[in-house]
Length: 324
Image 1 (cartoon, rainbow, N blue to C red):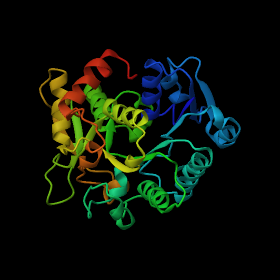
Image 2: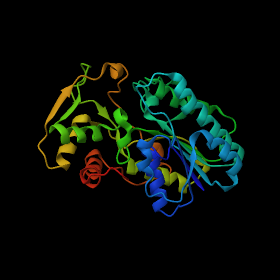
Image 3: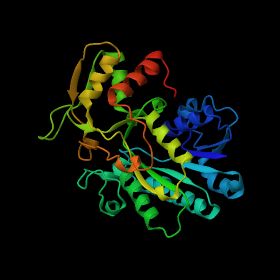
C-alpha cells in the first residue's frame, strides 16, 4: 500500500490520481472527508481505501506491515490564518507522529514543506540544511513548516529514507476548492470569464512596479513528477530537504499575459490594493535554487509559466473541468 495524506486536497489528489493511473491501485487516501467541496478530487480512485485523518495514526499502528511508502501532503495551508494552535496541531504535531511511526516501522517518507519557510528571502532560497534554523517565516503557516523542518533535522532517529519538499507557488488542476488560497492563475481565469479582464495586486513597495512582483510558479504536474522521482529512487544519500520550484522567478504580469495568450485574447489588466490582512507578510520575490535536486539525477525540464498556464487553461479550465 502507498499512503497519500491530504489525498482530497490539491497536490495530494494529483499525486493519488497519477499513482492510480500508473497502476498503483492499492492506495490509502487520508484526509478529512467531511469537507464535501473537496470530494470531486477523489473521482477516478475507485477501490482506494479511505482513512479519516483523525484515525490514521491508529490505523497505521495496526496496518504498517502492509504499507510500502508514505507521501505526507496533508496540512493546513491557509496563509491568512493566524491561530497558531491550528498549525501546531495539524502541521507540526501530526507530522511528528507520522515521522515517528515511519522510524518505528521502517517506512520511507516524503513530506511537504514550503517556500513560505524562507520568509522575506533575507537568507536567499537555497535548500541547504545550515540555513534552516536562521529562517524567519512571515506567517504562522510558514513558521509551522519551518518548525517541523528544524525538528526533523535535529532528530537522531530518522526514517531510513526521507525527503522534505519545499513547494514554491504551485498551480494547476484540482485546486478549485481552495477559495482565496487558490493560485492566481485560477483567480485570474475566473475574473476574465466574469469581467473580461484581470486584476492584480498593486505593489506597495517602491522597489517593485505594479505587477512586477516575482514568484517561482511551478506547475503541479512537475511537482508530481518530482515526487515520483523520489519514490522510485530511494537512495539514502538523498535524504534531506529540497526546493521544488522551477528555478526561474516570473512576474504576475507574465502570468496574466500568459493567460490572455492561452485564450487568444488581448490583455486587459488592472491593479487593486493588496488586502491589508496580508500586505505586511506578502512575499515580493521567490526563486528556488534547484541545483540540489539535479544532483539526485532528476533531469526533466520544468514547464515555464507560459507552457504551464497554457496547459492548465486549454486542457482543463477552458474545457469546463479542473481535474488532473
